[in-house]
Image: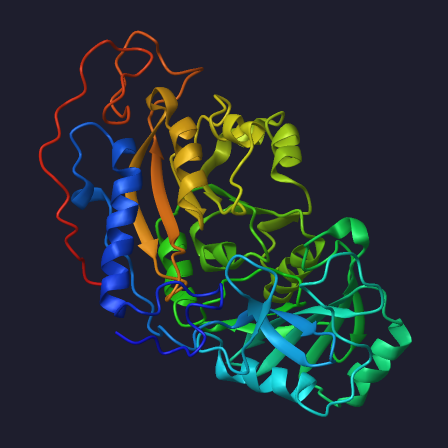
Length: 435
């Protein structure tokens, strides 16, 4: 089939545009099953525990966030788009087909032909650091509120010039920020620090019926058409005494699960996200929800020393693409979490997910209960995967070394058993469940 995008094959963004959407879903389901089936409990069949990929309601125009290169060649010709596959050459894309149409409109209004700009664009294919240039733009959009957040990345442009440009656009529905990239930042899109330029300091981002006051730096799921179902699927499984929402962002899972627990702790190192979480918890008067602007590693170091850690029954963990550290893995496996029953691991990278799950379920301490993949990024190879795990009970001290593991990965012997794993009872048929 012919790709809908005219830039397919050059742009590095989408890699599956030439395939019908139903085939994309089928292939992603097979990939998840192939990667994770060996980690399932003995005798469990992949088709019983690994669901087919949940499709996106929209397979085009679904992205409400984007990162674009601002490029200018030796002749002063400007391009706005993404890198060509395998190079730093920028493919000019006037209207990306997977971006929400309003993002494409705003890009043209900001940077279109003849627009006055505060500085030249960066030459991305040229070697060496180029000071005084506009290099990237990061955009976030909320279709329900019709508000934007924007970060302009530059290499040392006058902040007065940036403020004058942003203010002169008279876009009251856009929250403008800037971030200055140094030579040492290399290929980073955004530096650590950001500064407010113009417009409101936050923009209202809505998911389902709930709205959040966030700034453009806060992370959120880019597919607005699937995000409400994704969040509800994660939150609905959890109900108990205390919930830990680790790498919790601005607390979307905690908000969805707020009535299911007597206490919830949102742990997130990004101070911008924590500000947003504090805003809605204060606005809703949810005094049983606390926010912790810490790394997960630092949080565990303190929390595991307290007696009330025994009351934690549920954990949701949504780490970055790189996965979790050894310290976090050992925190999840701590014998002090005697009340822990359910753990959900949310991942956008199958490789690190598989690596981390292997360590989490080591010795049969946890068992995979269900795997639910979501197609958050149609037309690309990326998959968002939700893994539900149950911790074996009762938990007293460490797992006994006298009993064989009931949940050792297929094809592997647990440390406590020399028995052969049960034979597979059948091949996965990748049966599609109703979304």
